[in-house]
Image (tube, rainbow, N blue to C red):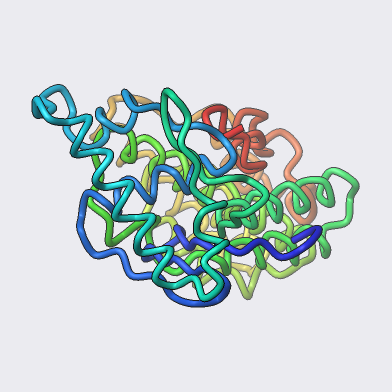
Length: 286
């Protein structure tokens, strides 16, 4: 993190955690935790009252929603104050605007922010052709995850979208890190990870392409083609579609033992939209 340390530290990539000046802050009520998570995901930006109401109650808020929401924020402030030895930090991290609330950006740091920064650095390194640095930066970013995002937080409609977006960015970062590792000739080391990743994401064509390539380079031509046919079967059964043209070109290259398979990805590289996701380009968080 650049600049002076920020007093409020929030973990979102796994279980929800909150520390003020390195002291743990306990927030146990489910709806308070929703408020905390939504404010943290938007640190430095105002979260409006209507957005908070939608997250907490959907289309059926209680008549007293305004007072109830104010109570949740007050209780959050009290929890921060209880962990604040000098009684100054708590008053400066959570602000009220006439239309919402926010964690002050210069007082709050989150692991999501660190993840996005690491992914951007990894992407820049990859685009500069430094695959070793790209793999290193992306590995460090992915190590910030300790389970599904906000795994222990009840999620309303707003947090559901936020978490889905985070998980897409996580998957994109994993794909780009695997691509960098393949460029470094680490195909044998990737086989176990890719086997698990494709099993968890059976319709993911990028992961299938990486597995096919790694298997081919490791001398497992038959298993490489089996991976393609598994994907094809799933796509046919679930969606009634064929694998994309990139995967079909990769299959043809394997069948013809194309020398280009030994390095790079040529016509079966990651599409540009996935590169943007892998870079952590989240419109609602930027």
